[in-house]
Amino acid sequence: MQSLQQEAPLHMPPIAVGELGIVRVVDCIEHFNPRIILRDVGYEHLEPHLDWLRPNFLDEQHKLLMPIQSFVFRTRHHTVLIDTCVGNDKRSGFRQWNQRSSAFLDSLRAAGFPPKSIDFVFCTHLHVDHAGWNTRLVDGRWVPTFPNARYLFRREEYTHWEAHPEEVFRWTFDESIHPVLEAGQVDWVGADFQVDDQLTLEPTPGHTPGHTSVHLASAGQEAVITGDLIVHPVEVAEPQWGQVSDYDHALAVATRTRFLDAYTDRDVLILGSHFADPTGVRIVDTPRGRRVRW
Ligand SMILES: [Zn+2]
Image 1 (cartoon, rainbow, N blue to C red):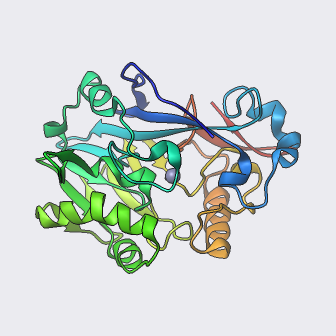
Image 2: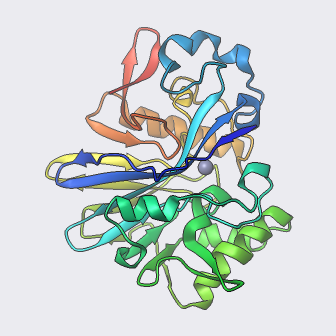
């Protein structure tokens, strides 16, 4: 495995959704052998899709090109950060994410969002690469990275991983979840939570029990931030492929299939949490099956 750690801050120009400008801030860009991410899927299974996956979503060796990125934007009254990537100094089962150091906070500042400006943080789920920048290490203690933010947690997601015996999940909770709770910055939210009627939640369970996508609406335009519901664009064409880290494979496939049925050929921007540039795509039906367009 190879990790391309950017030396300079990395954020992208805003993607417009009505009056919202969605900025993606990149923590790192991964090049994954498909077998690491997709269950029982090797390079040979990607062959029928090379023509549309390259060059945006596969690298020259046909590895999955997957940024670990946040989405940040201002609604009418609030500044919101969706997913907090890997973080610095954390322990992780992925060697390249272990005890790492990235320019993520510089990128966030350069994009116009200093940590103190964030009002709400929401993680689509509580895996290591979506919750890492919840906290940072200061004088040997984990403290919330965003001092003025309310961190929005789904109870079913928290409860499942809180009780999980595996060491890698314990690390994430000890370093990135519990310190936020101890600081009193957590609000428990149900599926009906919304921010300014421009941000609503759309539960998409399967990858994890409380996995939740984020629906945005502004000035007649819509978008959905999909977390790991669709971890790579190839799953638009092959929704039945499972992910190695799925909690419930059958439920994940059913939820992804239902989501694709609902959003194909609709004017709704799909913002994939690990989709490489252009990141925001539409799902369309073609004679060869479902594809992404931009
Ligand atoms: Zn992920």
